[in-house]
Amino acid sequence: MQGVRFLGFDVFGTVVDWRTSVARELRPFLQRYGLAQLDPAAMADEWRGMYQPSMEPIRKGERGWTRLSVLHRENLQAVLRRHHLDPTLIPEAELADVTRAWERLDPWPDSVPGLTRLKSRFAIGTISNGNVSLMMWLARYGGLPWDVIAGAEPTRSYKPQPETYLGTAELLGLRPEECALVAAHNNDLKAAQACGFKTAFIPRPTEHGPGQTKDLRAEAAWDAVAEDLVDLAQRLGC
Amino acid sequence: MQGVRFLGFDVFGTVVDWRTSVARELRPFLQRYGLAQLDPAAMADEWRGMYQPSMEPIRKGERGWTRLSVLHRENLQAVLRRHHLDPTLIPEAELADVTRAWERLDPWPDSVPGLTRLKSRFAIGTISNGNVSLMMWLARYGGLPWDVIAGAEPTRSYKPQPETYLGTAELLGLRPEECALVAAHNNDLKAAQACGFKTAFIPRPTEHGPGQTKDLRAEAAWDAVAEDLVDLAQRLGC
Image 1 (cartoon, chains in turn red, cyan):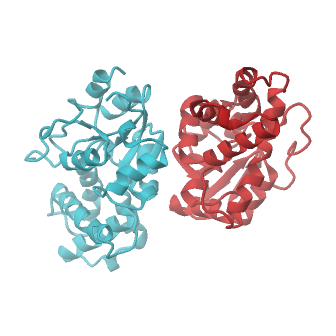
Image 2 (spheres, helix red, strand yellow):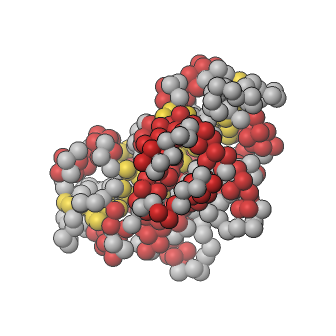
Image 3 (spheres, chains in turn purple, brown):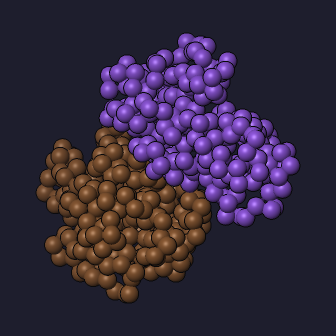
């Protein structure tokens, strides 16, 4: 990681536990609307399952730039319809609040102590597909000590498009090799590496619940591999 | 300030003491290049004096979007030429380092404690004409605990253009009246107020040195007026 000045972090899954947190937020909502028989964690998976497909038309240029918060809201409505709940019958303020579940995701236990240590030596920030306001409220909720919010919205592109990584480096006035992506997802690291970024992998083996099968380990020779963010700080001498 | 969720701060002058800090950075540089007879504080004033004029062609659309760090560099070269020092004779790395003086500005003594208290109740961020990387390194240098870096670069506009304030509110998903500008400059507050922002004034009577004549007091009925950022936190119940 020599020469690296900025560590950019994937956020959903890598820094925060979206599945448990979204399920917790969904539970009372589902109960209120007669869907108590649904498993909130499965519902969180279903909602998150529409994440990648909903960004695809934007990546392809078939749809203009649209923030993730808007996609989250559209995807929630689609999931509700799939379960025969008409979202137009739900008060606007309540739909908006449920969508903001993505601003109330718990950090993994090592995230805040690890980031705090890493920040002593590197500038740290987000390289997430989440939009700026979502990332800002999420950081305030969990106490994530970012120096900067970068990634999708400032570059108007969605990972793994090269623009998200290269545009972040450019925004920060750095060369790609002065930046590293930290992520729990091998495909994200692969895309960053192709842009000249350094790479660091940490596993999050329960991101997708107890039966997770992918991203259980580093699948390439990333520049750093650690157990979690505290271990990464240790390995990088912070 | 009822209903306000985000406090956006002017930075140069309001949060950091640019004049003393830039003078400190210029002193050894001027000595090295035979300009020790110049007063570094006067030189800092001269450099800063080109700040507003250099943004003007960009505001008018006569020049494309250009980051403040680039303008700072051009303005430094112009000031040196004015004092008969040819900047092309100076090593590139040294000119770059002197330009980065703007990333090493000391916060006023009340800034970090005040911001820390204000952050307990409000989201806080920059609404500065400084670009994102400048603001990021400056925050790291002084320990400024921003939740977000907004303002000029994310909105591709320079204050007091309405786009800088309105674009920041839009980026954060807030209505203008949910945002307040905190500044030591009456004209900045006037422009923000015209956009629907709430306003808070604090005086920085030595920003321009001992002989300062402007912005010594609130010149309009701003929503809040305080002695400094700690006093503002007190008044806002933080």
